[in-house]
View 1 (tube, rainbow, N blue to C red):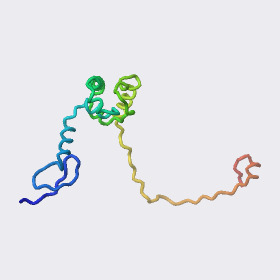
View 2 (view 1 turned 45 degrees about the vertical axis):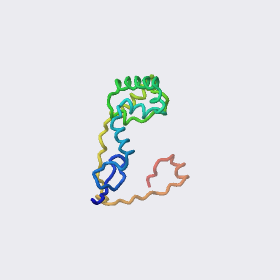
View 3 (view 1 turned 90 degrees about the vertical axis):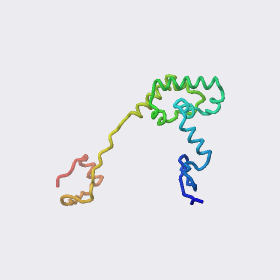
View 4 (view 1 turned 180 degrees about the horizontal axis):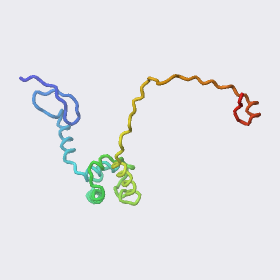
Length: 157
């Protein structure tokens, strides 16, 4: 019998021992990986932005309504990377809010943030070495009486 090798699961990254060339530690991990690979952008948006996506997938009318909303949203912003990066405004029961004026404004702002490409700040090497002589400054003690008599002007002594 062949010796068992230590492998890592392709889905959950957990170590497991196997004699063969298995990629997954369990059938459940393999099923989840296949499900994630076949998820369309419409399904991803519904699963990400809705509070209870399972109830949407169970109801045929709600599913067709939400898929229509996702198709309209994808026409506006087509990039899949954008939809994966955008934070959820709030968990809702429908995607209709994202098509409202406030929702479109939210998407516009998030798209502007997503497309923003700032250059990294320049880093300056500030070494601990000092250049030149150290000067010591002596301050003359100014009392309240001197300040009131001179009006804040410096005395020339």
